[in-house]
Structures are given as structure tokens and as C-alpha cells.
Image (cartoon, rainbow, N blue to C red):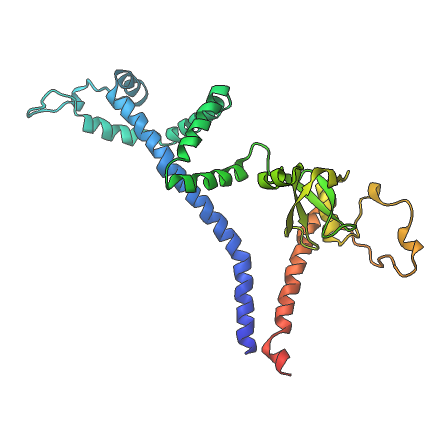
Length: 298
């Protein structure tokens, strides 16, 4: 039984270590393949079509790739098409000489041009009408809004980061918690309460990557003059690491004999935060060892 429990623990550790990397590589490959197959390759086909089918393209073919469509090598030697251009041969030679990365750079250029146009007043109106139109199709109207939210989350012009550290009365009046402002509240809550609301993420200790999302009236929020890194240190250390500029000049704990100050001082810099989190994971693993069959059967 002990061997079985150890194997399960090792397997879980392996998944924990490898799965994030595998998932990251998988997502990157999906994005790269989609971009290559659905965007870059169609652009390349369009460029090759332009070079083969237009007089201006024939000039580029001759000047850049050395393919002269009037050359006898590209004429049908016999048959009903004798003397006519063998466009299949022209296309084959062009595909061999063509530089595939051209489509990648052209696709990027088109994205920049689209972004420039959509930044204008006319572009915004066009985008708005397009989105309204997308919301009228039965299936598309279910998928498009959520797809847009996902894209905006990862590619928002204003990065989705915690910039403002605040204090809010949570989980009840008289008790204040650290939080990060993350948004402008929900429309329904604002309309129902008649008060301007903001989204607050309240991190938990000692793992600030988890926590609670609450919606608080703006007037109940206390902005704090500390950085996000300092707030994270406070959360990880359980309140031990208070920024020097925010430490009370009076020793509050000394006023009350029943409250003893912390006997251990821990210094954690941003580079060490990940080590603290890893230590928490190791503690979880140790707890798993303590509940093995050999321990519980004794």
C-alpha cells in the first residue's frame, strides 16, 4: 500500500511539473498552426495569384524570380494550346522560388493597417455595425461575444494588471482587507444600487494567486499608497512584511498585553516569492505522505 501511495504521489508531482509546460506548448502550436494555415497560407495564395494573373504581377515575376511568361519555356509546345502560356508550369516554378515568409509579413502589415483604420472614427463605426450584425445570427451571437471577451482579456490595450491597491471592509464591517481594483463593476449592480461600483480582487494568504472577487461602492474604497509587489508581500507573509512608509509610528501591540508581536521576522523579496509558493506545494505533498495507509493503520 505504501508503494502504491508513493507511486500516486510521484505521478501527481510529475503532472504538476510537466502539465503546465505541455499545455503551454500545445496552445502555442495551435495558435501557430492556425495562423499559418488560416491566415499566412491564404495570403500567400493571393499573392501568387496576383503575380500569375495580372500584367503588373508578370513584371514582378520577371524582375524578382526570373520567370518570363513570354519565354518559350513557358509555352505549350503542341496541341490546341500550342504557343499559349502554360500557367501551370509558371505556377509550379513560382511555388518553388516563392518565399513563404512573405505572407507572414504581409499578414502582419494587414493587421497593422486594420488597427490603424479601426482607431479612426469611421473605423469604430464600421466595427460597431459589424458587431451588431454578428449579434443577429442565431449561432454566431452565442459564440462571438465570449470569443471577443477572451481576446480582449489577453490583448487589451490597457494590460489587465493590478495597478491600484486598496482596502475595503470585507468580509464584514469593521474588518478591512487588501484588494486590487480590476474593473468598473457590473452594469446591473450599478443600476440597481444607484451607486458607482468597482471590481475588487481580494487575495488570500499565503497564496495571493487565489482569492475572491467582490463589487464595492467607490466611496467605500480606501486607496493605499503602496505598490502591488508590497501588497503581495503582505499577503504572502500574513501581514508581517508591512512597507516601512506604512508602519504605524506607535507600537499598537505594546498597548495591549494580550496581543504579542510576531517573534519571527521574515524577509521576502520578489524573487523569493515563487520559492515560498513552492514550499506550500511541498507542504501539501508532505500532508499526503502523512495520510498514507502505513500511518493510518498504526
